[in-house]
Image (cartoon, rainbow, N blue to C red; front, side, top):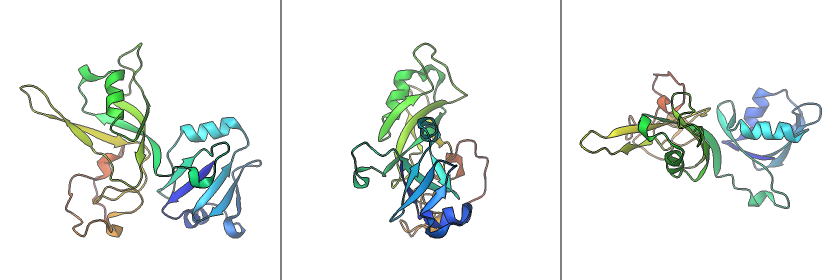
Length: 213
């Protein structure tokens, strides 16, 4: 399984795991290891299919709040052919009307993202949820995060449907991109141009109020 870090992975792993020469191999356990492929790419070897599937299911992963884009190495494929531009997340859809909770609508909302996988709504039960509609989808890691959409209603005010991302690592409260904080942002000289659009509220379960510096 191949991985690319946003931003640089070597320093974060060195600070987090015990020091080992040149980071060539870091023990995952007695049978697995991490191999440094250079240019910020790493190869994770797992001792069993079960371990590999568990890690893939629990994506996204991060080290010191920096995203690891983790991909299964395709059989017969090369590193250059692996698409590291997207990563899977669980995304909560807040403020969606109860009457609109359905598998078809979950699929339509998932279509706003580069890849839609599935949701927590099944055909058998319209409501199988934890208080919000949850969708599993891939986001493009170099693009600003999607914050939601306006739901139009006849003869009533629009509803602001909001997205919240589970296990979201560091992202910028100015440009909305993963991998850097506001003070490090190089995409917009007017750091507060988008004030109110991006913030800690995009993290599922976050109660943070403090402005990012």
